[in-house]
Image (cartoon, rainbow over all chains, first blue to last red; front, top):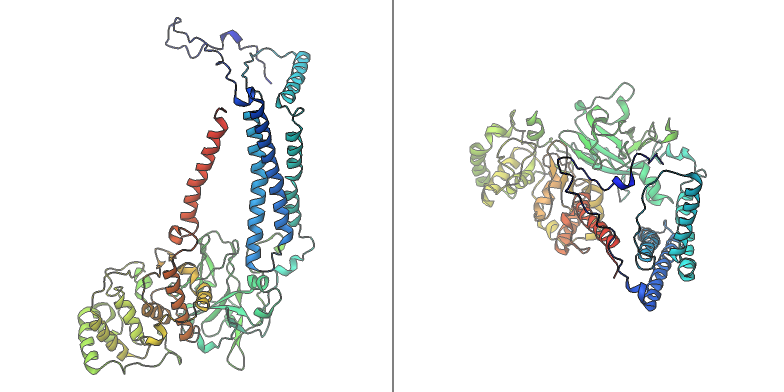
Length: 343
Length: 243
């Protein structure tokens, strides 16, 4: 609070008098006459409004309960359908929980709380008097809301407000990943001798199948039988391409990571993990559809445009005795976006 | 540089599984007429005998399928050099396209025009949809509405494209599209993909207005307008007088 003594209360209605003569003053129109609302005069209307407010708060309670029904009744790992249904319940539940309280309070204030207007003039701060006056205002507010006289509204709003924060607690608890090992971000299903297979059929790929200009979408052999198929797939997907070996410029130590111009790169963008699979077979650009990060295949997938910070990790490959493409090892670095413990 | 992007249409993609020269369906007169048409319309860029120049790639070994796709969709002859060849009203009749295809197929073995059995649109649409989402949807959009690539290039929308041209595009990899040879996606699976595309085209959008199937751009615009409308409705209600 500042010092109000510079403002004379009586002078506050002189507005921007520059260029105007003193006689042209606005007459203070004062507060418009109070017009009673339906609920002010008719006790039945007041009762009805009270019930409406209580129903809105009850809607909030139901919304919160809906959230928990969605949270506990559906197993998000069961199928994509149940995951979608759970999302729907969580979203609708939270929306009703918040809207019920908000709309209820506004409806309460508009129909039931006193709507007479008051004007207070500024004055210098007098500590003790103001404190007493402020206490009086708080008491008046409590009295005017009618929260003491209307137990239905009081009880429902207490119920709604008590339940509404619970979804947030449950959601934030789920962010705790201390039980999970960060180490699993460093490894994928690829290891020496694992065959490169087609997504989604899982059939192995011969080196001779991959003609120049081709792009194969690849998953590791055995992924379709893996118990955590989606989690493993999210780390292990690979794009396999063949180009003229003369167009590739491998750095020292990586010359034998490809086979005759066939190279395999992680499909997970190093920016935020979208699948980078938009391969242009003439320019040898790999484009991420989310934020337009562009990787140059001829320069070991160096970033040539966009927000990604690191090149796509390359999967070293070779050909086994039957002519099928197999991995030499896992990726030599974690795939996908950066994370705190990546180092 | 522009020529590199646009001109290099085909890497010579001849391998065991594709190297079936299909000259049987072209008569000697087709090849002869085709050569005349080629010399008059194509040789400026693609060179005498289709051996390629600085302005256009060699056509030896691209096959009849590539000619039928490029000429049949009007992409060739190109109107002008640019990021990529655009669809336009076709410049040659079906007969002339056939003759040109016969001539280019005679230059070297390459993918041939697909057999009608793979174009009957009676494959497994569900299987085709799965393959489409894995192999095609990243560029052509999950609803086949097309999408942008780098530096002015784009993947076209697939609605209204004939099954034959879709098949030929997969097998030849026109412009910057990768090649999906028969070892990667079998002819039967290509038939499934075509069936899927024709099915979703015929089905329309079961979820209401598709807003161009462009994802966040058009849907975001709609939500901005609808969302702002809801906010305005709330502010009007907040400030209105109760009766």
